[in-house]
Length: 256
Image 1: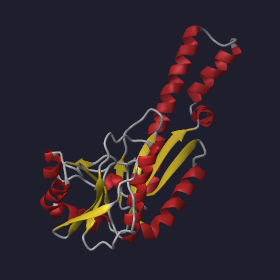
Image 2 (image 1 turned 60 degrees about the vertical axis):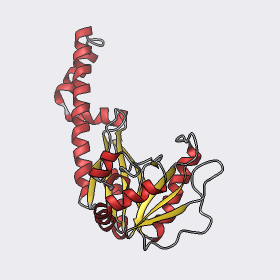
Image 3 (image 1 turned 90 degrees about the horizontal axis):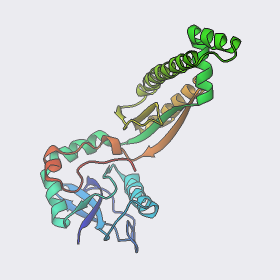
């Protein structure tokens, strides 16, 4: 049977709560494999596992329970190994890398911040900032809406101005928050977001980081912010190159 991997930690990690359950239906018991001062939090892997809400939550809950006691390197949902021996081989082969990451991420959490424009508010802002757009809009209004070419040109100018504002606002958001974080990871781009940023934050300064988020929100009412965290530091678990080449479990981590 395949082995499902939730995360990697030090073998000195406090014992997991008795009876902890993970993914699967019925849920598989969670256990720990150790090798050379490292430990992997695992369970048997159910057949046909899919990223359904129940199992995503089970994966997240195991990491939350384990990470409450000491630092855990979280693996992506669905990280599988052929068997327990494959997992301990990965621990042995990547020992230096995992120890470095455990030290770097000790006491750290991740906050993911996504920003998007409130459409009406950003259009008002673009109009207020761009005299040429205001002038053309007024000219079209006075002429009963303007010609097709005039309307097309105005639309193109507004789209270009909004895109430029997206770039500027994304940079402003990054500058406002990255000074309060230990590291930054750029999330995958999406047409729905002007920024998708993950910040590595010390647990002890998380309150200051969140205060900076609120300050930015108040100063930029045309931007809607979505903050998710504290999370295990998914975006900062860099894969061990040798392990990645082997394609075994634990070849990185990702937010769910």
